[in-house]
Length: 148
Image 1 (spheres, rainbow, N blue to C red):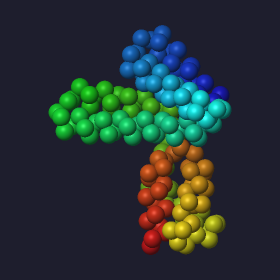
Image 2: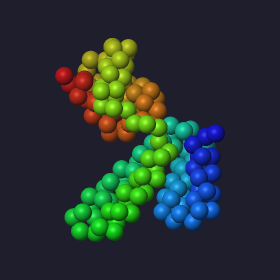
Image 3: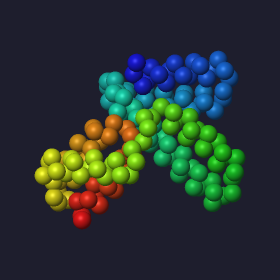
Image 4: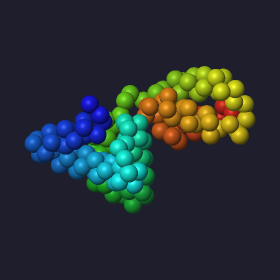
């Protein structure tokens, strides 16, 4: 079962249980997936869907930061609840050590030693990570290892 099908099934479950936060969050994720599919003119694979979910989580963290500045506790709690729902659909995240080890392995395989090869390393890493780390995290680790 694809991740999109899982989301759709969970949306029905949330509607039956009348869980508004879960229903709203999953509905938003499905809407973003469908929009991306229209833009791409084709179906998204699970890795692309996970990237969209990571993007939504990142947006929620930015919302939390802005809400903290404005002292809006209700918005913070709502965004945290939405993050919790979205994280259910992602695989267990890689630890920092696992990510570094995987990156070192890719660097060795591709014989990458300079920042010029960062694009090739990033492409390979994104495929291998399969949504278990954000693109920002991968980029930071690749950059650190290539510069050292």
